[in-house]
Image 1 (cartoon, rainbow, N blue to C red):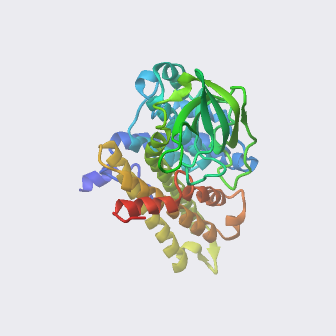
Image 2 (cartoon, one colour):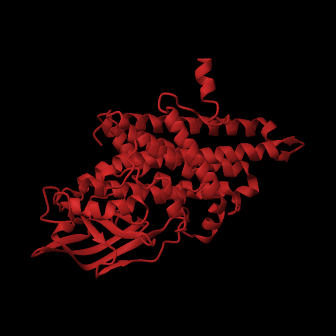
Amino acid sequence: MTTQANSHSALRTGIDLDIPWALDDDRRTWRRTVREFAEQVIAPGATERDLQHRFDPDLVPKLADLGLFGMRVSEAYGGSPSDMTSFCLAIEELARVDSGVAVTVHVAAISAALLDHLGNDEQKRDLLPLAARGEAFVCFGLTEPSSGTDAGNVATHAKRDGEEWVLNGAKQFITNAGTPMATHVIVFASTGEPGSSGRRPVSAFLVPVDAPGFAVGPPYPKLGWHSSDTRPLFFEDVRLPAEALLGAEGRGYAEALRFLTWARLPIAAMSVGLSQACLDLTIEFVKDRESFGNKLSEHQYVAFNVAEMAAQTAMARTVTYDACWKYDHGVSYDQEAAICKFMASEIANQVSYRATQLHGGYGFIDETAVTRHYRDARILTIGEGTSEVQRLLIARSLGLTV
């Protein structure tokens, strides 16, 4: 036991929780590689990007060189496919320094994975190698102004006109849509006649951003994720060839839900990274700052708060990588995906609140990193399914009829 513990000591800082059953030496090496990259390349400009509400396209080739955009793309199309644990480790380490960069990679990677799953050979051959190299972003166009959490209530519609589809409607909160790399959006639109539920079936379409009638709106003035690009999309009589349909007609929503299930795992990992950052920064702050003649860390109230932050972060990390392990080993993970996304995102909000509180006035200044993390944490209980939706999914997995 002693030998095993010592073999992990190079990665441990005293505040990181190692998970021997989920992380082998290769994954620890990968985590260390991404951490060093994040600290050396992403962290130096994080505050400036946040204050300027600026997406930095110059970071994209550097992220691509690390292979991050191709981690969910098949090797046959230029990707470097990895397991879910390795992908989540990368997202966690990026979020430790800049959640905006982390979500940029996350959305680009899962959208490319969806195209890899649904696209035809020509679409995948033409677009996926570019996506894997970070030269093209595929965006995920599901959320609408009138639906929000009710993602199946799709007002955007596509109608057959001979050999073409005609697309009309709008999407909102679409990540990466206004970046220079954005070339296509996977748009979910209602098609066909209403079913027994009164709703029309939903299909997925691959829409180029330069299609006539397609407009990308201005960036949102957001509370957080300032270094990530987020915009509304508008479609007015956008004509698409028949082959723009991805997968089977009427199966788009089912495929979206399938991908949103595993996409919860990287959001949980992002929450873990943010919590870890807040913990790291708070320990450093309370050890250095004095109050009433003592270091802040010597006050029991402060020490106990930091201890609870550490315990919460450890809990979030454990449930997240438990879900990743199950995904990677072909074990049912739907319940675990909801649990880890729910727990980790709620914990990120709690830990970031404690961090700003313990930083006092510094926790209210935009230039302070914990303030940025506090703002970035707020979206984590909303994106990829709200906490309310996760509670619903967990309850149903327990056999409760809600």
